[in-house]
Image 1 (spheres, rainbow, N blue to C red):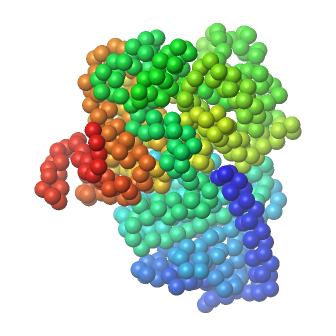
Image 2 (image 1 turned 90 degrees about the horizontal axis):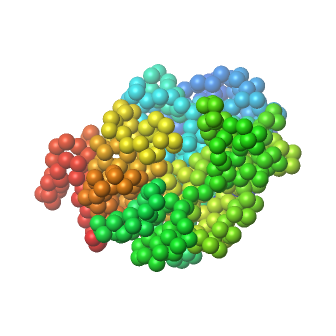
Image 3 (image 1 turned 180 degrees about the vertical axis):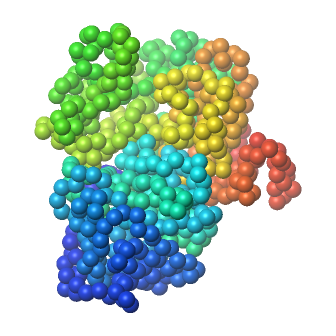
Length: 634
């Protein structure tokens, strides 16, 4: 579905670029005043400075100019223009690549695309085009997991590379810059081998697109789309990307998915519960007795418990599964006390992933009897479906789960495999991962979730564990010490993970009505009790359900707090679960009071601050509280 559309688009982009360059060859001459090449439409004017190789863009609606600054070392030549198209050659000093560039201004919209093509080998990533200069008072808009904004002058923000081909990067392939009203965004239309590099120019944050090699070469034509806004800020960017996702075949709503599988409705407004002790059904009854009546029960159970849960109103039964890790049998024999029941051990050695040197790729590490850490091998994504087909149908005959959580599939990057029996590009890897998720949700008819999340999987899954949790800002070792409760709040967690000045619901503005977003299982609502209320407020504001992980002892000490968390969040999540998030706005300059609106006329206002806020109708919103209006039933 989405994968086929992206593959077809890559081919189309390559053909288009070749045709454009052939046309440019008929008129290989500089154009524009002073040798500058220019192209424009009614709303946008774009020019290329052949000396610096930088672009300058003027938005005719506002008169605002966006100017690039040279960052990469290289030389521009062969600058030509024809109609709304500019062509040039970039000789990149870092990689040695000779890159053909074709820029095409849209016929009427404030947009242009840039296609890049280069022959030959490519040993390192290409950082090109140059970044647009950012101004004090503007923000970077970055779809890292749920979404974040960075003040460009904020010295506390680390520079970093974020891949576009895996959940621990950017989960939607775009970025933007805005002052809250005007701005621009770039959509990476060929994201399978692309990244963004967040860096600084003149002490201000900016973004450079980075193109990674495909099997040691530049490969197919790479393409960016730049879009300019005279109003709307981050919301306008998300709505433009939503339209792009629909055109690209990445879009499928929960309503459509529910028609295919009615069990999807059990997910909407359900708290995700991870409970590890043996009295599962008794605990389920206690939860429901406290009013926590819609539950995604995520931990695996015996057949009789699954049957009983399936017969209990409001319960969706699920279990953890994984198609990535397996261990060298020699290490199992000499160093491990046990083997994870979901490792695909039969895949050793024929179906594991090899790198360009022929070595097996290293994955999750486990501690051996000698105290040392030993890495798992990684199952080739091309081979994963084979093992799922062996495991899942047989198990469902005795264990009637209605849901399945597939760990790592959308969290781990698309990878290349150099085994000659199953060679795999990153695009092939993506396709294999999506086939695995499609098999679970469509062939096995299971409500399906995966880790962290990426929009390539939107047509195939129903929820993501981890989308709400910003990967770099979780507590240390969150993936291993899931049950540890943190009484002390790490500064980075408070500032960024739960920082209302930084966070944005970018994912919800694009895909709220398509996929349910949840916290990570090492970063759930009750993980840091001091921030529990703030997490609940984010859930309500975003229209998403909470996640609880607890022991019996913690439950018995906090039953009323769990019940309040559920009421405050799941009532809203149920009411808006199938609705598009249409708007998100800041009601105070310090961003402490925020408001979201949904297509079914539900409006959520949250005060994250320490002072009361008076709403236009005179209602006073107390600190750390929420107000919900519209058709929301308790």
